Amino acid sequence: MQSRLDIMAPAVTGLKRPSAPNLRDNIHYSFSGLQLTPTFLDLLLQVGVDRIMFSGDYPYGSMAQARAFLDQLPVSTADRGDAHGNAERLLGM
Image (cartoon, rainbow, N blue to C red):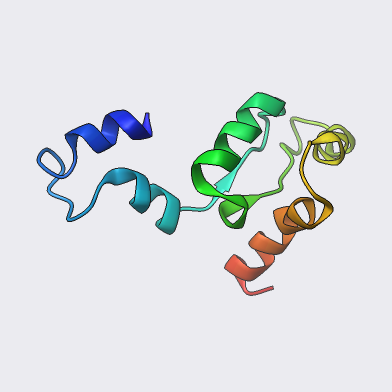
């Protein structure tokens, strides 16, 4: 929906810049409960690895399955490691 939002902004939203940069620069994303490789890769392409956090859907989902999903993603080891490092940086851990 980012491209559609960008067509409307800023005339409709009143924002000083298009919506996509705001969504990319000001929000962190978690793919908890959405263990679909295409969904993850789309998010990665839209916002970059620095804005994505690893999470599980505990207690509703299996942490083992969430970890297995992370391990099979077609991304570099460094990018996979950033999935938890991003949360640590955001939360000051």
